[in-house]
Image (cartoon, rainbow, N blue to C red; front, side, top):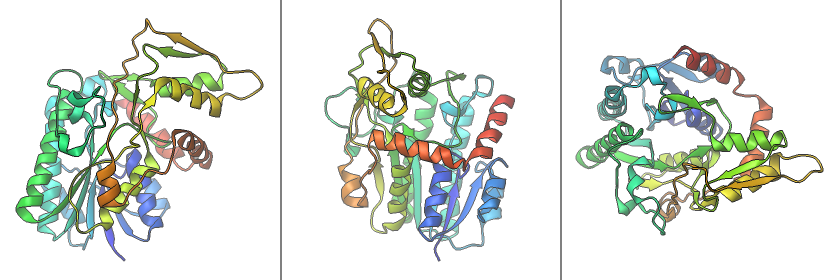
Length: 340
């Protein structure tokens, strides 16, 4: 049985990925930097190791084992950083130094396959163009604003992975992700260091409560979003493929407008005989940034195609919530955020 080591296994994508790996017959060693998810992994029989990726010494905890692949989902992201804990140095320490430590671990322990997630923030300067963004379009960072240090650190980490791929023969794959939707242990995000409720969440709450769904700004602009279950299948394919490396866009390949999003959410969550109410408020700024990604490279080389439409995603998210599988993960994360 092939063994996979997953860093960042306590996060949103990580928990879904570990489940999918187990379903696919892999043995998994899960790792994160806190004890929040240790009880959860103990309950499903997964070996869990608390480890700080910024400390080289800590990697001895997961050494002396044969891994077919290592997956890195461990990162410092703006959505998880409270105002009082913001530090530009931490972005470099965790996202760059942490990635380098994992890469060195792979080389020292004979691991041939390395798969890492990255956000799509490094393409921000390419957004709003009319054609889908391809991998070969390269990066276009913004060097000011709330995401700048995050983008800089992620880009440096990507370059480290590409260097180790060319210099040491490690098969490094980077999966570039737009916003990933789904149900799981991520109940709150931060903007400018402060907790916020996303427009997506507001639409759902208002639809459930039969409140008008307000469409701010230009409601016909849109963005590319992808479902977490499609994302973890892409990771699975990246692990399985032994002859590919490089950067891949993992997205829906479809630009979902604000208007479409609101109407589909209302179709799923607005119950009863009354019709949903939509109010256009073009004078209000919506902060939506427009982008869509070309996923033909992932389709061809990883043999991966997203299966969930936006409506399918919502319906499946409801079923996932009914399972209550991540209940105490969610509760523990709430406590952690309150203490930050």
